[in-house]
Length: 187
Image 1 (cartoon, rainbow, N blue to C red):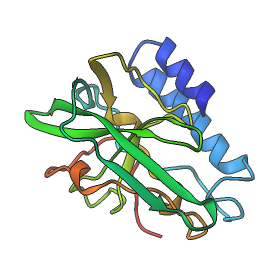
Image 2 (tube, rainbow, N blue to C red):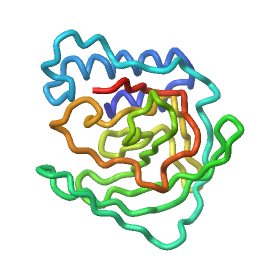
Image 3 (cartoon, one colour):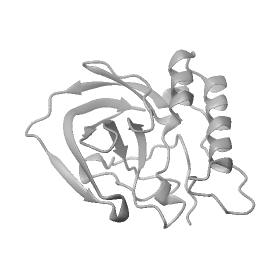
Image 4 (tube, rainbow, N blue to C red):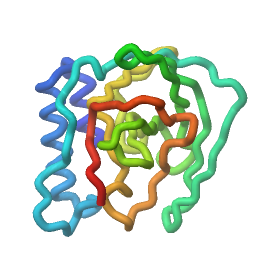
C-alpha cells in the first residue's frame, strides 16, 4: 500500500488517480495472504462512494492542549499506543470540525488519523485517513495536512473478526456524514 500512496502523492488529484488507487487496493485485497477477505469466495472488490473533488480539503494542524496518550489492547497483536500530536481543524462541505492527529508510539510508528462519522455506509468503529505504518499519507507538513476523504478506508476488523483494530477515539467522531471513500455494508 505504501507504493500505491506514493503514486497518489506524485500524481495530480482527481478521479483517474483515485481509480488507479482503487484497482491496486482491490488487487491486494483479492490476492494478498494477509488480506482480511482472504479465503472469501466471490470477492468482487471493495465498495466506494463516487469520487468527489469536494471531499479533498486542507486542514490546519494546531498545537494540542494537554498531551493525551492511549494504550489499546489488540489481543495477540499486543498493545497499540498513540499520542496526540496535534488537532486538525478543517471545513467539510460547509461544516467546521476538528480531529485529533495521533502518533503511533511503537510498532511501525507514524501519523495516525482515524475518524468516525454519521453515515450508515460507514463502519461504526470508524475509518482511517492516515496510517503511517501502511504508508497511508496524502500530504502533511508542519502546519497543514491534506484530508482527502475519497481515500478513507475501513480497518481490517470491518471485514473479518480475526483482526483487532484501533478504532476512532471519541474526539474523532464527527457530528455529520462523510459520503466519500470506502463504504461498509456490514459483515
